[in-house]
Length: 348
Image (cartoon, rainbow, N blue to C red; front, side, top):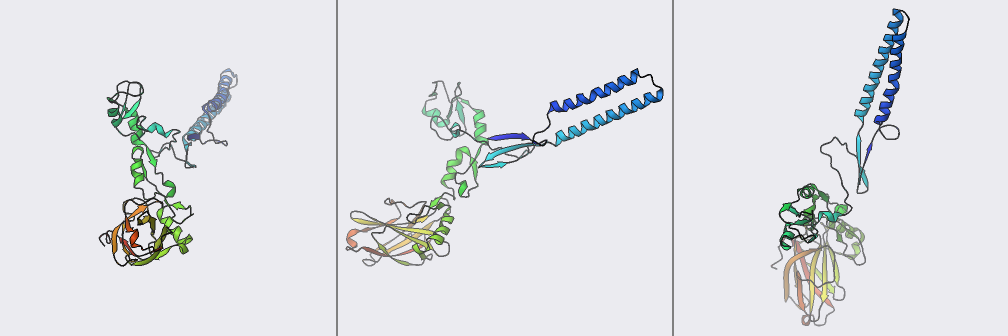
């Protein structure tokens, strides 16, 4: 919501034109009266000269005051106070590079009314002004679903200009993202945003934030509840099959790895995941697993998947499947795990 105000007098408002003209009207009669006194005066030439000089001096003072008033008017600044994220931003209206923040009370006006997806250029309209995106024009066979008039032949240049010049902040701005994208492309950015919030994997902890902040949080608040490891170094674990989740944290970089055990009817699923967003260049770890409960019979390597939150759903990929008969009724699962960057352990 934009609010406009003019800086001026004590109350923050500039002098109005009516007041300015009123001051002029108040001064002009005194000049006319002096001129009439000069014309009707029966005094000598010396008296007339004094009146004329006084009239000229007053006229000069009037012009000087007018110039000062004009200068005051030119010095006034129009301040645009924009409320954005709960703050006011001041900018001069004369600046060509200034940006105006606009609050949409109904952001759906920038979405296609048919598919409800963000409008993208080209945008079409029927004769009644109803909008539709290119794909929807084909789906409705070029018949407007609102009024049945033809649609898909006339472009709405005004809405295209609005979409083209609109920029929206990332939904993850509160977690640190400063990216501003075209409204129609915001979903594409959000899918790969590195600031996608992640949740702490510790049970009953509700902390959520940027994944590096989650790593720092785990190290500071849950140090006793995690197991430290070093990249590419084998770590021997004894997992209780009744405890589904085990948390690991790399000693130097602080990356948090989650090892989960899922018991099915005839097998045990063992998954390994990393608390990180699905952004390019984030995570990309591989791991190797060696089941030593029944000897070195099972060995598998795979890529560690990134997850933003730990769930209790059976994994679809990135897991080791151990048949139940190999466990021989043991309540613990003994294995060795090693984790590294890249695909170094995929073919372990």
